[in-house]
Structure formats: C-alpha cells, structure tokens
Amino acid sequence: MKNIAVIGAGTMGNGIAHTFAQFNYKVSLIDISEASLEKGMATIARNLDRMVSKEKISETEKTYTLQNICTFTSIKEGVKNVDLVVEAATENTVLKTKIFKELDEVCANHTILATNTSSISITQIAAATNRPEKVIGMHFMNPVPIMKLVEIIRGYNTSNEVMETIVGLSKKVNKIPVEVNDYPGFVANRILMPMINESIETLYNNVAGVEEIDTVMKLGMAHPMGPLQLADFIGLDVCLSILNVLYDGFKNPKYAPCPLLVNMVMAGKLGVKSGEGFYDYSESRKAEKVAKIFSK
Figure 1 (cartoon, rainbow, N blue to C red):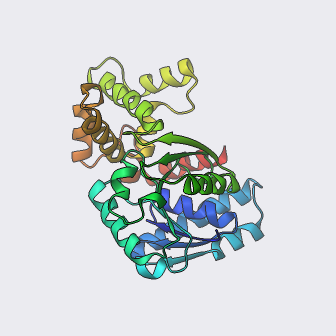
Figure 2: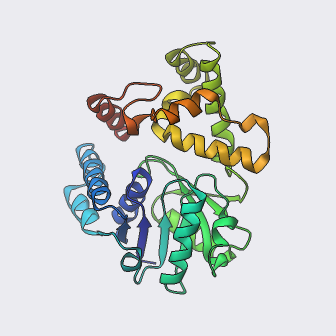
C-alpha cells in the first residue's frame, strides 16, 4: 500500500495527509474547494515548519513530505490507482454516505474505503457501497501529526484481512491502533462527549465560570486541557453533531446536548475555527494556542 487519497482538506484531512506523506506515502488530497486545498496545504507547511524548528524533522524531510502530496478537486481524478481512501469530510451522515457511494463507483475493486468519522455507524456508511467488507473506520485524533491514537472501527461486515491491513498501516505511520466495535461514539467520544456536555451544563447552571471549570479538571484530574477549551479546539458544531448521534443511537437523555451548546452553535460561536467559543480566539491568540499544542 503506497498510494492513499484523503477526502477533505480541513483540520483532520490535512493532518491525515501530512501524516501519511511524512512517512513517504503518495497522497492525493481531495476537496471540492480549491481555496480549502490551498489553506490545507498552507497549514501542512506551517506545521512542518514548527517540527523543523523543534528539530523533530529536517528541512529535507519537510521538502519530501510536501512533494508527496498532490491536490485535486475531483474525487474521480484523485482516487485513480489508490489503495486506500480516508474520508475526512464534515460529520454528517447524509454527506458521508453520498461520498462513499461515489467512491464505490470510481475506485478500483481492491481499494479499501476508510472513514475518519468520530461517531457515525461504519455499518451504515458501508451499506451505501457494494464492498462493505472493505469499509472500515480510522478515527484519528486532533492534531493528527502529534496524537498517537487511532481508533480502528470494525463495521458489521468488515473483513479480518482489511482490519489487519489497516492496523498494520497505522503502526507504519507511528500510530497506536486500538480496535473497537461499531456502536455510537465508539469508545473515545462515547466517554469524552458526555464529560464535555456535563461541563457545559455546569457552566449553564452557573456552578462556576469557564476558566474555573477548566482549572478544576486540569489541576484536579490531571487533564492537559480543560473540557471547555477542548470543546473549542474540537469545534462546538462537531461536539453537537456527535452528541446528536449518541442521543439518536441510544435514546438516552444523558446524551441530550446542553441548550447552551445548541445556542452557541446556532449563533456561530464554534470555538477556535470561528474565532470565538468559550474562549476568545483572535488571530494572534489562535496562532499562539495552536503553536503551544504542536510544541509539546
């Protein structure tokens, strides 16, 4: 497996492309927007520059990483001759199933189709294809070039061969794969999102302020980042989408999104990506916070 396509040039997509390219895989980065592709490549270049400045990679490694990535606005063109596609589009079931239906039609028969979904059923996504045995979940963590974990989610029909291939590939790019089964939220978000939601409820009920809640969790529970800051970094819209998937999947009120989260998303306060969430993210502060994460 040497040729990989990544669908979506946003935060997760460009991070996944960066990671594979850094380990000398040939990567097709695909997005419908040329502007998004340019922004994604600029992000990859900045993150590589940070790694060079921290002496984690050399200038030569930065150069060949960038040379290993080609960009496309056409899925059909971008997936020619690839062995694996990793979809990293918006966390939306309708969109993802539409993409997988198209991928099934234009990809070679041997191509494995993976989704970076953080909560949506792999089995449901696979049902849009004629190759459900070759559909699997690869849930990377953000920021992808730094975080070691990859949740590998087996759909109902995912074959053992595909599971073994993806677990092996994850190890080759210096990740630690953990195999989980296909239930809403898998493991990471089934545990994480209720904690974030409860933190927002705590703020909503005026038990404490934003910084106080985050300080308690950082100092008292040894979390590297408070849950409200983490929600900002993930994206409040993404948190809301995941909670809705959990609530719809389990029909349990403990997963119902806090009204404050719903209102903030409707108001466009999405966290780092929008410049404001539970914290203020002017351009200078946003760059400072992201740089701190990559410096660790």
